[in-house]
Length: 100
Image (cartoon, rainbow, N blue to C red; front, side, top):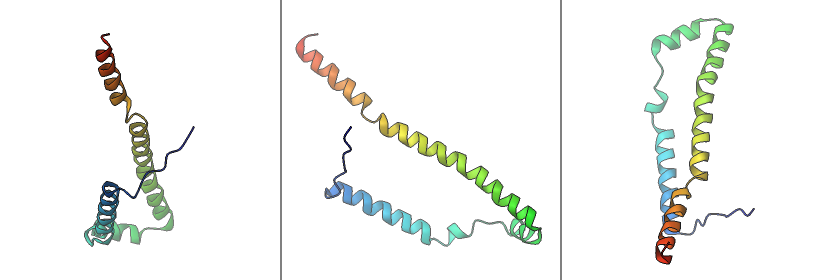
């Protein structure tokens, strides 16, 4: 099994990488991304005890981790199946040329 290394020297790859870096930078540096907390929720959590705060942190992890793994799984499946249809189309076109 050989592992192919992507060619980052192509102009298309450079544009894609530059765009991804710009998007990530704009999302990380945006002040709106840090302002997504409700004032009431913040004051309630700050006034509660350490058990409640620990429970909130655990709840956040429970709500974030499963969708993250599902997204990763879908991405891996899509990556593995990326050439499945193009291979069958090329096989059909070659069989048509041979008269089958």
